[in-house]
Structures are given as C-alpha cells and as structure tokens.
Image 1 (spheres, rainbow, N blue to C red):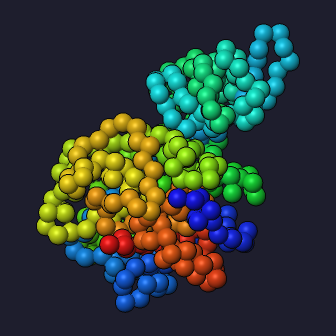
Image 2 (cartoon, rainbow, N blue to C red):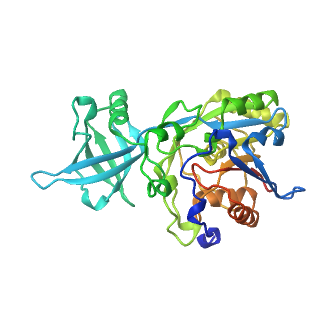
Length: 360
C-alpha cells in the first residue's frame, strides 16, 4: 500500500509533553466500527464498562532503561569527537545494537568512552568498541563490561531516551524516570515505554478486578526502531527492526482458555498485540514464544487472537498508525484521528488513549 495513505496533518499543539495527572484521568476515544456509535468520547476510568467478565487484558511488563548514551569517540591519535547512541537491542551479555548520531563519524574498531567526564569512580565510566556498522545509522557495540556489571554501568551513565517529538521540545528530567515507566514494569530492557500502559493505576486495576477482568503479562523489549519514520513509498518496501519478546507457557495456556470459553483478548498497547500475534498460529492457538519478532501489520492482515486494543495516538505515516488502521479500518481510523485532533485529544507517548474494537 502507498505510505501516503497513512498521512495526516497534526498540529504541534496536539503533542503532549507531560502525562495526565493522575495517570488514569486521561481521555479515551472509543472506536467501534460497525457499532451503534462508531466514535464516543470517554475517559480511561471508563475502560471496565466496555469489557465483560472473563475478558483478559494483556500487558507488556518491559521496563525502560536509560539507553541514551553520550560518548567520546577515540581513534588512535586522532582528535576525539562526540557521538550520541541509543541502545535498541541486546544481542549478547556484552553487546548491544544501537543507533548512532552522527553515524558517519564511526568506523569499525573505534573506541567510545561514556561517562568519563566528571566521573569520580569507576561506576560512572563505561567503554565500548564499535564491532559492526549496519544500515540507517545502526552499529553494534561490544562493551568492556558484561551482564549485570554492564547493566549497572548503563544505569549510572545513561539517560531516558525520550521520543524525538518530546526531546526536540524539552530536555529529559527527573520526573521522566517515573513518568516514562508503567507501574507494573519489571523486565529491564526497553528503550521506549509501552505507552498505553502508562494510564494504569492501582485505582483502575481495582475497578477491573471488580468487573472480573483477567490480567496477563508478556514481555516485548521495545526498541528505538519504533520511532524510525517509514522512508519507503510503499509498505512492501519497509523493513521492521526486530525486538526481543517472551510469552511463557502458562500465559499462553491461560489466554487459550479465555478464547475457548468465549472471552476476549484485549491488548494494552501495540507492543503486546504484536507479540501475541507473533506467538499465535493460523488456527488461533497462542503458543509459548521467546525470541525476536519483526512483525509488520498493515491493512489486509488477518488478526489471529486479539479482539480489542487499547493504545495511544500515533504519528502520521508510522507503522503504528498502519497497525491500528489494519485493526479497525483505515477510513474509520482516519475519521477517528480527525475527530481526536478537532476535539483536543493529546497525542503520542504522554497523550490520551483510544480503545479500538476490531473490524470484522
């Protein structure tokens, strides 16, 4: 499909720079193709009223790490130069793939020092070697530290990698370490938050429990590739970056039981949806899953397991707007986004939510 079919005009004033407070006070646009009311303006706290006893919410419990690293490149006796790297996928205990800026300054074999300036102890220092260079500014870094020691060093020297549409307007601050993390995050490794989950609070969980809604957790470590623009003119020519995910056997079994008794699988966020769809066979059976997925969902995709999706509002011409258009229909989602812009919904990571019913 032509990528420009997924374009729309978004005013700068629609982009949220801070989350709603409290988290569950955000607005929620309900999109129900073929329903008695296709679009309805609600709030996140209204979520339980759209679910039935026995339905199951699926959350992504990945935890954002401070994956933005500022370093100094060293190459022999040459003059050093500054580089910025965003880690996006771990490939070994001592190796990460990263997006470099500017990538042209780096060559295989270069040494990069992170956190040395002003460091008073070894905890504030980290070094790596450029092991490979790929396409679109991607490099593979081999760090001098490994495993938990590397994790600890990244926590000490790294910064939360705010999405470009926020970072271009303000700097990361201490509030973001809490704001850009779901309350149920536990598995470290994400570069970006599964942002639909940012709306959930203990108060909302209590309301869901009262309504008899199940909760299940999977893990997909969101990579920086989620922010990359689609540069191709046709969706067939776009290649998704892979992300590491995990669905355990117990969770797969319980989700299959939900479907078997007529309940619905409701994914919180496009990340949990992409992982569940990756783990589901053509006959609709969810299986245990562990490994990378690069699933790219566009209109025409036949959803195997997921019945409803709660998600934030996405960028024009993004793979995520393509996904929601596949889920609820392109024309329906174009109308929904037009309505959202006209009525003041807040967009992107810190913005408001939408609850999508699948177009059958």
